[in-house]
Amino acid sequence: MLFWLPHRIETDELKALLHKHSKSFTADEIAEIGEYFYAGKSGGSVSFDRFIEAIDRVMQRETHPDIPKDDDGNPLELGNCGNEFLFYKPHGNYSQADLDIELTHTKPEGIRDRLAYSAVKAVRWSFDKMTGWNYKSITQDMVLQRVIYLETIAAVPGMVAAIVRHFRSLRSFQRDGGMMQMFLDEANNERMHLLSFVRMKDPSMLFRAAVIGGQAGFGSAFLLLYVISPKFCHRFVGYVEEEACTTYTKIIKAIEDAPEDNELAAWRTQLAPSIARSYWKLGEYGTVLELMYAVRADEAEHRDVNHLCSEMKDGMQNPIANTEEKLNTMLLKYAKDMMDRSPEVKDVKNVKVA
Image: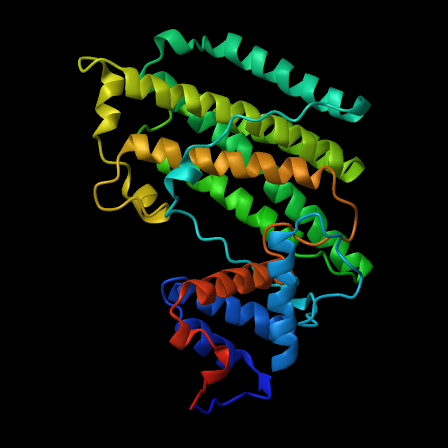
């Protein structure tokens, strides 16, 4: 049996190859991978031998994680141009594993971490006292008052980080490693939390005035601190998100455990606002409880990302949308699917694009 062996693989050939594995790759994933490959190769191609070498490399690292990373670079010889402008972060379609988050805590190390942790704990204690927050006797109104206000503040750090990094990139003529897009997405994600919850409660004029004051005070302070120490700010946000995960976990438990005659029980079946059902893909009958689960999953990701960013060195690439890591993940899924398929279709050499 003769096989057609492509001398080089271009973006179209790669996408055609992945389309043959539709059980492992969705159309959106294939389109995304194609964009990353095109950007990483600057419109070029990769030899078939190097493509196979790249697959072998990721498989070895998967089966032998103790193997140290070499300095020879990726066999696909990818550039990192795509990190500067490509950022695919669809929200929603969370799996059950994504929704069942773990309440983790990053132990403070050093003065900077301890200051950030202490500041968060002090703010949390003060806010709880001022608002009379008590998990044992919460109501729908108390929950909405709390989450709406906090989300107006939570959307600030990501935007501040993006703005500071944007101006630094402009004045230094240097790339940002895709960090700016990640923080813009984080800020917008928090904004979507807010826009969902305000469909369930219309804030009073006094509440709106408090939001303006909070934004002015916190926004100005955070901007100054971010210019001075981005790492402190990311650690601070990481601890804030730890508290957010705890808060949403207790809200979810209160909803699930509420007796049928309790108003919180209604959220188990009440439809989430339409903007929330659209954004998180909750389905036509997505409930407020499902919305709470999705928001908590978002906060867990922000927690992990900001803790990671507080430890990153200047010049490092976006940890969420790294071109090389994205394509490595694709190669691993492709290789696993090939091994699972029947022998007569295992060989990639029979791929041909008209």
